[in-house]
Length: 107
Length: 107
DNA sequence: ATTATACGACACCATTTAGTGTCATGTCAA
DNA sequence: TTGACATGACACTAAATGGTGTCGTATAAT
Image: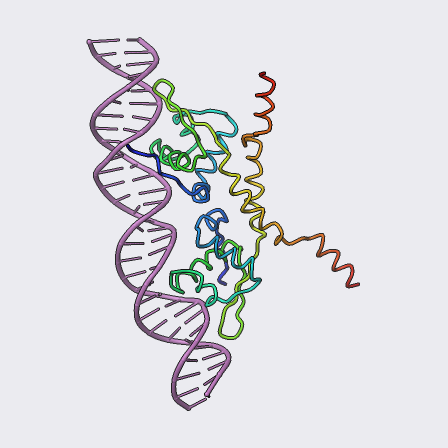
């Protein structure tokens, strides 16, 4: 039995600007076929299809066949992991309000 | 005049698990030299140094020379961009509370 | 002064990535 | 039924990535 064990790291999936643009297009349009998505890029259909396959392996995209076309839709859930990860670093961000406060206290 | 125009995409910088671990180590320790950082990995010093260079190009890390060692520290600020980007997709997350509510209404 | 340490810069290599074009298949239209 | 269309699968290629070892140099220790 062939299992779908091709998990893929969500961080690697969003590292590519083409893939981030794909996610954005799908966020705007609910569901889009490959042909339509391809029109927004300067690369060929096959390349876009591969990027979508990578997004699919990261579960960021869900596809379903409708007639002769494959329609893609966004699944943003895996981005929760990124959100959690990056949130940890918020406490290290330069807090400009705190800096300003400190400057005033130094008066 | 040679400019430091080697900007690097923060998304690509955090795509690698080694680099994410480096960020974590620096979050825990304030400032660490390359030698010390290397002990936490199974790869050689040169490889770790390269990863740090990539983090530096993404401004996620700041280095300064102290004697014969180079000490690295975290700069989490560029992660704000990631935070903003991912926040946009929050509205697409499956809201389990809403689903539960809908299920109850279907009763 | 000599030796050991920490590092950056290189040259090098294997693997992965991101793109291409082509072909076979399934579906819709005439 | 014939033909156009949409796609996946595949073979191929150039470039980027992630690692190695070596060498030169600056600093620290003896």
